[in-house]
Length: 267
Image (cartoon, rainbow, N blue to C red; front, side, top):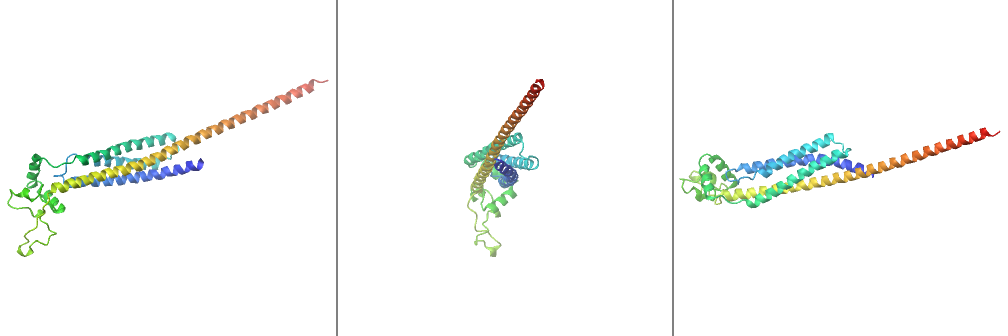
């Protein structure tokens, strides 16, 4: 029992350190996912940053709890360990909800409505032109649904040109003869779905790790309880034996005193 108790105690200390590290890793990945979702904001669906933002907050809280446990919790107080396990259970519930949220949002993503299509493309050729140029050149796409979106303009932007193609005529002033045919909406939506799926997997891995740690904490509490019960039982037996010994000693003294008095009364 004593060996198992010590092993579980050291495992909990190591687990607290691992928990803090995992919280930091979750925060880093969640921040990167938020950056990716905002990188192509013009075509990114609304309300998709809630799940990674919540996961980022949970990662920071988990990192703080792990650091606090490593610095101040010695796992010798049963009450503190129970509070620690309850706090982790709450984080597990929240992160499980985040994973489900991301998975549901993954299935709800759809193409833009015609009204939004016009509003977004009007900004694509005015205020957000630099963002669109970056998006079109990086993702190798053109317009929202394709190059046909630019039919009302005099020319298609150079960012729609397929610069990897060998069809660019450098001898005539670098005229682009190969245009990216796919629209950016399709690429960004697929990218968003992929990010949401990765958020779900990250939340799932974190939840499994924390459930394992909570299971170890529960075993520790059970072993601690058995140890305390055994110690109380041993103290009760020891006290009982001591009382019995004291009673026997008193009885022996009384017997001796009685015999002494009896001999003193004889002529």
